Length: 406
Image (cartoon, rainbow, N blue to C red; front, side, top):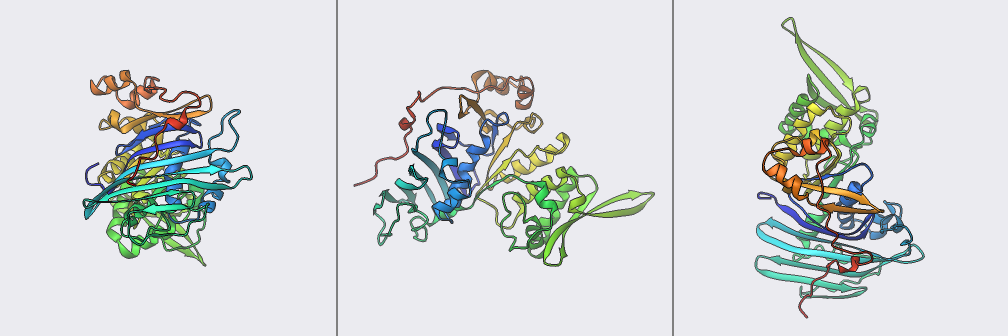
């Protein structure tokens, strides 16, 4: 992950959505491969959940997902209220190197409310070690001057995030983004906004490109150049105004009998594949680049031959930001540079999602160049190393909180 400013090195989930207990080692880029419905979206939603927690009230973060019952793990008879937890281990090189971990444990209550049971953060920054340990509304820390008034339903880290000791953690976690681009949203007339950050579904793409056209024309030109390798003859995309709303206009040009000809189309006339490709590219070219970009199934509605350009962008931007991709496409995995460390297999069994490294046979085939990842997926040979590290009911064994100084 050299060159990255912020890296999540490890993600641990306990009773989060369809994940009962799992620890995921991250590389960059990372491809989460699995069948439809296996829980890939649930795994990447942990990053979106963490990001939203840094800027929104915890109650709002739950409501955005349909309430806490939609977030906590439920399987079969195990539907009673319980707790769920998330832990991330990170490093953040911004001036003085920063590394550490952050974790919280939240209890769901019978009346659909919740409380924060435990929350800890440990940060090593420039040789100094800072930490806080919160148990319900009790709070202790070695950072001078921090004594937040805590509500049972609020996390502490966003409240103290303005302090120099923990500001980089809030910044890094808060700038992670998950994108599930919806072509229909891009084709509609859009309400204008600042255009600094692309929305997860692409519904403010016109504002994002409008901002680029004003402040970074070279970046917009590069985006259009790459789009032209996916959608032949497409040379330009620009924003149009329709009253108070915005839309996108595509220009296609070609040579005929030595003469340059062109035609223009608005977004509603373009294919879903074109709109999705533009949305995916814009996730990387937007003004404020996220610290982590997760793209859900970029292969959807995009021609397999065009996926090479998407992969080139993923590989290029992985030098400066962390990238996670969910997929079930052999064509997307055909790139020769994809190694076993870039792959995790997501499985679904008896109502539980697991994220596993590759099995020994799949690793051997990649290392000896016998079969690439895409070829293995086509032949149903890309297999997971499914080690059951937790027995039934043993998810509490997942280590989330380390002991901190007294």
